[in-house]
Structures are given as C-alpha cells and as structure tokens.
Picture 1 (tube, rainbow, N blue to C red):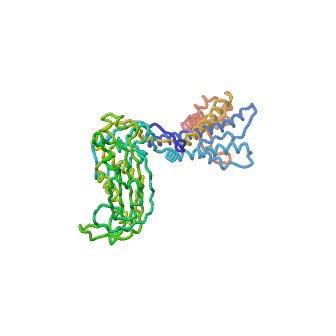
Picture 2 (picture 1 turned 60 degrees about the horizontal axis):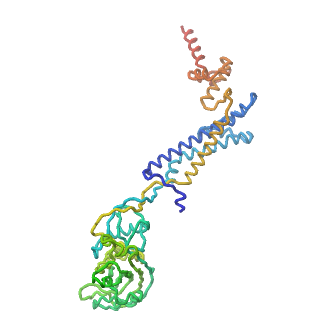
Picture 3 (picture 1 turned 60 degrees about the vertical axis):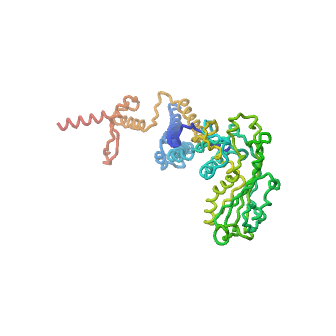
Amino acid sequence: MVSLILWMFLPTSWELGNVRAILALIINFLCVIGIWVVSYSTWKVGALKLTRSQNSSTKLLSLYSPIGLGEVVDIIPLIRAHMGVGLLTQLIIPGFIIAILSAVAVVSAPIARYSTRVGEQIQQTPVPGTLASTDHSGIGGALVKWNATIDRFNSAGFPLDQLADFLPDNRIDWKYSESEWNNSWSASCKWTERTAIELYMTGNTSNTGQLFHEIQGLRHIFPDEILQDGYTERYTDVGPYWGDFLPDSLVFIAMQTHPNKSIDEKTDRYTNAPPFHFTIAAVHLRNAPANFSSPDGGVTWGTGPIEQSWYTMANCDIKRVASRTPDKLDKYAEHHIANPWTWDFVTTIFAYRSFYEATLTEQSFRKEPIYHPSGQDLFRFYQAYLVTKDIQNYEGAERVISVAVPTVELSVPLLVVFLLYLVLIGLAAFWFVVVKRIPSEASVPRTKIEWMAQGMRESSAREVDASYLGAGWGKIEAELREAEVVTVRDPAQKLYNTIQLGSQIRQQRSLESTLKA
C-alpha cells in the first residue's frame, strides 16, 4: 500500500533510460526558469522603489539581479551588517535560492536516477499455455520443468489450496487472480513445521518395505486414520555416506488413498472424481547408522540410534470443486483437468528424491546447513509435479490472465515537489511580470546589456553631449554596436578605462588621418 502511495506508473511503452534522461533535462530547465524568475523578481523590487515617484531613489545594490551561482559569489565581498535588514534580505535570500537551484541542476542526474525505478503493472493479457489431461500417470527426470514451474507458481502467488488444470508459459511473468482461474481440484492442508523426533534403526534388511519396522518411532508422526487399510504407502531416501554413518539423509514418505477407491462401483471403471487424502513427509536424519555389508553390495541402514532427526509434513484433503464435478462438465472439459488419481504412485515419490538429491548431497559434503523442505514446499512440489505430468500432451491453449508488465515508476514525492515548485514560480512570475509593472516612461537597467548602455549614456553625457542621458534605445542601440572601451591617461598620467561612442571613434580616426596627410 505504501508503495502505491509513493510511486506512480508511467506508460508501459516508456523506457527507463529515456525517462531518466528527459527527467534530468526537465529538472535543469526548471532550475534555469526558477533562477530567471528569482533574478527578475529581485530586480523588480528595487526598480519599483526607484519608479515610485519622480524624486524616488534606492540603493544601487537593490537593482543587483544575479543570474547564476558565480554572480551570487561576486556579491558576497560587498555584504556588510550596516547595510540594513531590507537590503541584506534582498541580496541574501535570492542568492541562497539561486545557490540551491544551481546545486539541484548539478545533481539532476542522481535525482532522476533515484526518483525512478522499474516496477510492474498488472494487466489482463492473453497468455499461451498448455492444458492438463487425464492421459498420463507419471513423469520422471523433469528437473528443469519442475524447478521452473515451482519458481513461477511462487512468483505468481499461486495458492496452495488447489491443483492446476492449465499451465501458462513459464517464460511469462503471470500473476494469479482467483477470478481468472477455474481449477477442478481444491485442497485443504495442515502443515507440520520442522519438528525434532527421536528415532532408532533396527537394522531390518529383509527388504520387506516396512519402513516403520526399520525405523522405530517414525510411525508416531502420522495421524492414525491414514495408517489404516485403504491407503497406499511409498517412501524413498537420499543422501551421501562415508565412514560408519550416513551423515545426512532425507526420507520422503507419501501416503494417499488407494486408487481402488476411485473405481466406480456401477461401471467398474476408474474415475478421476472421488475426494482423497494425500500426506507427504520429509524426515531429515543426521548421522544415521550405516550397514556396508548388504548382500547386494549396497549401503543400507545399520542398527542403533540416530543422532538427530527432524520431520516436516503436509496433510491434505483434496476434492473436486463443486462447480467442476463430472456431472457439470462435458466430456472434453472432464478430460482436460488435473489427474491426481494415479496408479503410478512410485514415480511420484521418486520425483521427490530426484528433485532434492543434488542439493542435499552438496550441502552435506560441504558441511553447510541442510535445506529441509517445509510442508508447504512439499505440497508446492506436488502441485508442480502433477501439472508437468498432466500437460505431456502439450495441447496448447490461450487464456486471458493477469500478467506483470515491466513499467517505469516515478516518485510521487518528487512529483509533488515539482508541482509546488511550479506553482510558486508561476505565482512569482505572474506577480512581478504581469501585475507589478514599471511605468512605460521609466527606464531601469536590468541585464548586462542594459547596464552597459547605462554606462555609455553617462559617459557620453559627460564627454560628448548631455542629451545622451535621455537618448532613446534606438540611438543607444546603434552607438552600442560600435562603442569601445579604451584605456586613457588622466591629468596625473594614471591609466583608466572609459567608454567611447562609435561617432567619437570615427571623428578621432578621421582627425588622425587628416593630420597624417
């Protein structure tokens, strides 16, 4: 929620690099405009005092209007405490604002960098995928598909309370939305977090497959109701070995309602409809006794206590969704749903072994913490295993579902600052440019060109003709194009600079030419 408040989406067609470049340009442009408005407003305050009446006067420095950080620095040596609060305020505050705007312009690129980011916008989009079918009972060795599907289910937020009838393309960053899905199987699971347990190896090597006979204490972790008749049980273990112990082993134990329960009593045919119970447990054995003298030359469990043991579990009741029962679906739809009622339960449990084997072996040899899948992890793998098993017909389909589309996000606080800044600058410009006007007959220099013209007026009035003080801009403009700053000597033979008009220069050069002739 906070993210939605602090960031806003930009059009998905905009690229991050272009947005940052343009944003930096806009920041620089706004800083330039702001500096001009501050400079103009500062000058206007002094100019209005000067033109208040015919005999008005104002401090010369009150007409100083810096247009950059360099000119702000230039005025610092002239500032004195005795200049008065009004004049000091008129010099310091605009200078401070211009310094800030100049600094903002310098760091416009970092501002653009940290005020934008790549986010994602959820849009409903037609997405290609693959339909499930009831034609397949198992799949093995699909490690890449399982891993990709688990990652996509996790990133999409696919819930742990259902099985998928449709698998969108894993290369697309789709997101789960309940209203867009109509899966046929729902699941209600109870999770057992990692729990310590004391276990003892009996050394039973009769290969009876009775896991609870071989590992005493293991039976007690399972609910009594699933240990009765009517359940099929499968287990497998995986882990490295050396010395007299199995340093780390994971034992996967799965129990499910027996497939016979899915046979219709009237038709004596298999159905994919009755509810069933599914339990999957992962038991981590640390330093279990090993037997290296097995008749078949392999390594089996030995006899003795297991140093440490833990288990996790998922207990799930799985049933058809009320609106997706066989009597409410046509033959085509009934064929294209998840198929958890499989006779090939051995392949299911061995899929767990192959999926976790490499990670367990590496972590054990490296003496790193062992990743023990949680009950949620175990059921997530079950979801991924079933859907990759069921889509093996690769019958393509397209559905409109939510997709995370990469988009550029702009910082809302920055946008708010921009808008406030524009309002303040706009009000200042409107007030000092439009509302507060200088009388048309008044002439108060502001820019460097105008101050050069003012200096030329005064110099010309002293040395040429007093009428130059009231000369219009047309005459001054023409003279300004040809005026020169020359170095001359005063009566004491000291050098100083003075302004000479173009007409003065022409007369002087004409006189020099005549004398030479």
